[in-house]
Length: 146
Image (cartoon, rainbow, N blue to C red; front, side, top):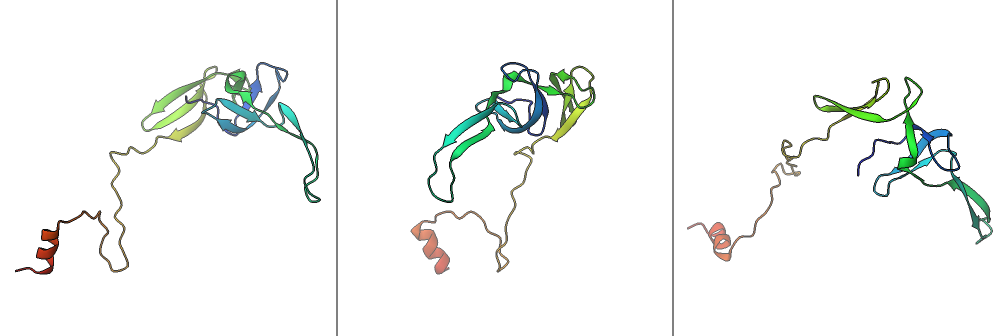
C-alpha cells in the first residue's frame, strides 16, 4: 500500500503515550506500515558488554509508530491535515486538504514502453547485441561460404 507520509515530513502523533507531540519523520517502511519520528517513542535496550571496545549499558533509540497514528503538519497553515493528490500533466502534487497548498511535487516515473534501450558500444566500435544460438549448419556456412 502506498502512503503519503514521507521522510523529512513534520508530523503530529495522534494516539498513544506520545499523543500531541510533533517531530520529523526519519524513516518510513511502507511495506510494514510504520514510521520512526525523531525523538519520539524512545525505547530502551539493555546491552551486555561483549568486549573492551564495546561497552554495555542502556541504549535508547526511536521505536516504530504505525503510520495511521501520525498526521502530517502542513508547512503553510501549520495545522495537522490530511493530504490530497493533484495531477498536473506528468507531475503529481501532494496538497493540503485545509488550505489547498502544494507540499511538494514528484515527477512521474518514466514509462517503460516509451523508453528505448541503450546500445552499448565495445572498444572495437561494434555494438553489442543479444546473441542467439546457431545450428551447426548455419555455423559451417558462415565459416565456408561456398
